[in-house]
Length: 417
Image (cartoon, rainbow, N blue to C red; front, side):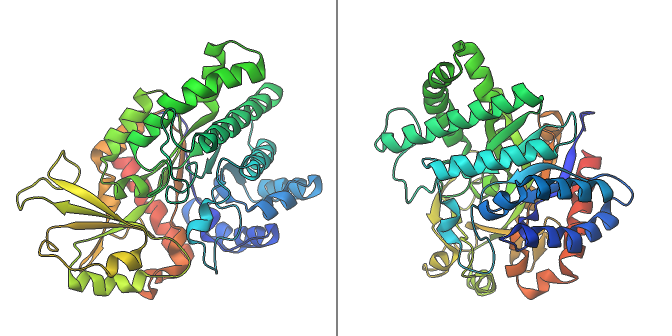
């Protein structure tokens, strides 16, 4: 790996909690125990997850001061926040509500800036901060494309305007405090940004050409400076599960994004389920249907028996199902043994296979880790938020044991790369 400082954490969105008191109790109960297993006696980074309500509580001066003292006492530090879910994220149906409010709304902007102000107070000196967020919005709700002048342009204009304002405020934080915070739009299946091509099209055809002049006006600066500020503060949260579901080679995606000057705000290390959609596999997948989260499915249909498998060029087509139950209700085809489903259900990184069930962890291959070693990103976050809805067998040993094993898996990959 490179010699740049790497910050590795796990995302606290795995722990239920709408209120700040719940978040703090999870840190006391689970995070400290995980710290003692994976980094005894060493500084331990936190990947915070704060709902709007929790953020409003933590932003209060007394509460924030108490938390800073707690972190200092326990050798903890915060460097990233998951700002994707605005409200409740456990124990009740979330599904497509997780994408609301989207980036066309002031609620999303105000929430994100609240997180940024909190993070600016918590960051250690000399450490930059990252916030991951919704990939603009959910595609099936917001029916327009993300490049250039398109139907739904008013909604897209609002999104760009809010991202410009966000960049301006993050620039103000940097100018006044020296603290650099960047926002990562997180591509996800069936959202306005789900593939590398869509990310590139949004940045090159929409955000940069329309956002730069707006930011230059907002900050009374030249366009080159405005573009540098926009690219510094608005980037991508690279989730390995989400891009693997699209059957994208991860190393290639990282290379393309960085080559086009798009900041990788952080990399979320996560894995999805993969199966050949046979009857036996569908029977096993029924255990993964739950009423809480959306489990989008991408089906790679092999065109011919000898066609290349995903990860290469050509040879098949990708078909989408909005949720796992819809995929399971689809007919079993004659090509079920050769087709592939990748399901947006995060499974532990160390899980590779169990009979007919496989994982996309293998998509994090040697080329990916080598590319990550040279990529300009220092924030890595393990994210397996679905632990509490996993089948019982995959929860064996409890959450602390599972997360500790994920740390060991990641460190093993980093060491060997």
